[in-house]
Amino acid sequence: MIQISDALKTPLDYARLPREELAERIRRRKTELNAVILGHNYQRVEIQEVSDYLGDSLGLSQEAARTDADVIVFCGVHFMAETAKILSPGKTVLMPDLRAGCPMADFVTGDALRRLKAQYPGAVVVAYVNSTAEVKAESDISCTSANVVQVIDTIPADRTILLVPDRNLARYAAERSGRPYVIAGREEGEVKPGSIVAWDGYCYVHDDLVLDELAAARKKHPRALVVIHPESRAELLAQADVVASTAKMVDIAEQNDEVIFGTERGIVDRLKARFPEKTLVPLSGAAICGNMKVNTLAKLAWCLDHQQHELVLDEDVRTRAELSLRRMLDLNHGWAAPTAEEAALEEAGLRKTGCGCA
Image (tube, rainbow, N blue to C red; front, side):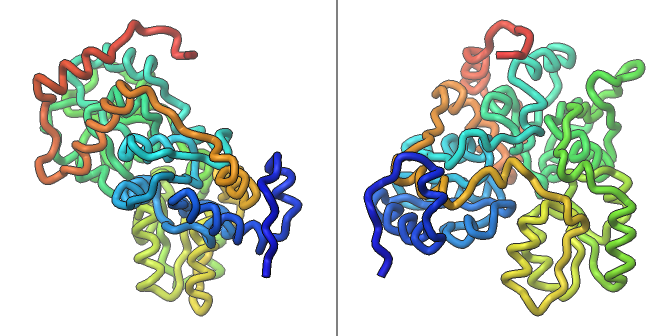
């Protein structure tokens, strides 16, 4: 029987404990706090093993909102914990490490987006869920990598769209929806109505995947289905058998015996453990998100014992960001211009533009 001592002072103290004791501490403390642990697909395997739910960022936040948990511990990156707080304002949201950020989300700030909106009055702003709460609050509707085309198709063909922050996802959506595509800041001449104007951001993990790596993987596994995440470059997506979100990749692994996955290898490690008899390989062994891996079992145990670090959002930002998410979640009605009440709420949240450094 594992003996559990009192709470320790630092995550480093927890790191000295055996893995089994850490897992037992986490299970006990989770019960005491009525907490739920969310593990993103890209987390370390030991984090995934103690998580109550595994999946992508939005799906996890929705799962947590449906539970009666008082505390949500999000093992992911910062914008994901923000999304959980947006959808569950009455719950305490904790992160094992506040330094777990997302470089792609950080490409665009609320101030910078407001300046782009001023350049394109009347444009519809679509925020990828991989964005900050402040950016979602400045947007008309959110999207995921799975539904971005569906969201775009609900917007009138003559309405210009600002899609932030991923240029690769924006290009993919433009090609699938038949809209012109430009990158903000690189426009040459007048932008055609109905164009997708992409923010010049990207996910370094997916953007770094290259054709040479795909060729090597295909040579080694010639019969494998090639599945690539839409955050990857266009030339790589053109070589894919399937372009899919991480949630869809799980379904594909269930249905196929040999697959090459062009995404962060954390989900591949998880799927290989689940289906050891199958050939499931990462397109690149170097496709690792260091930001996701900042979270560890020791930090998770410390986080629960000390109820740190709590994610707090300004209520005005949270409320306006929720409007963007709710519009996406209600896709049966598609995009619509804001109601008078929604417009007033959004107008109240505007502030003078600045350098974007705040």
